[in-house]
Amino acid sequence: MSTSDKPKQLLHLVFGGELTDLEGHEFKDLSKLDIVGVYPNYADAQKAWKAKAQSTVDNAHMRYYVVHMHRLLDPAHDKP
Image 1: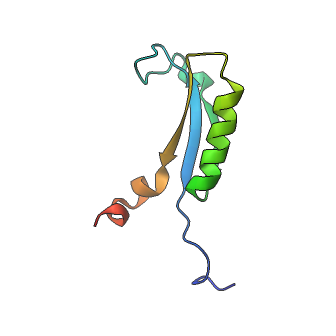
Image 2: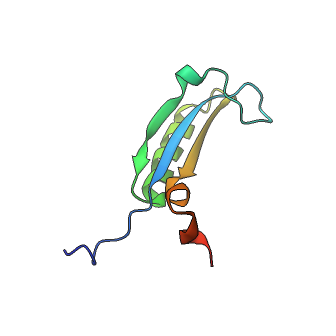
């Protein structure tokens, strides 16, 4: 497979931790953030996010997020 045949990498970061408040996005302890990983596409990132979110369902303050790193690295990519 040549480089032109490969799908473009659209990096996504999955991370989470315990929030101080259910209404916000501030983490209780940044040193305890759970960096799940970096994934080459949204589908793989979503699978990892779902698995981690489901594994912490008993703690209402735990939240996991998917960050579209490719948008941070190349902001012009998503503009029309």
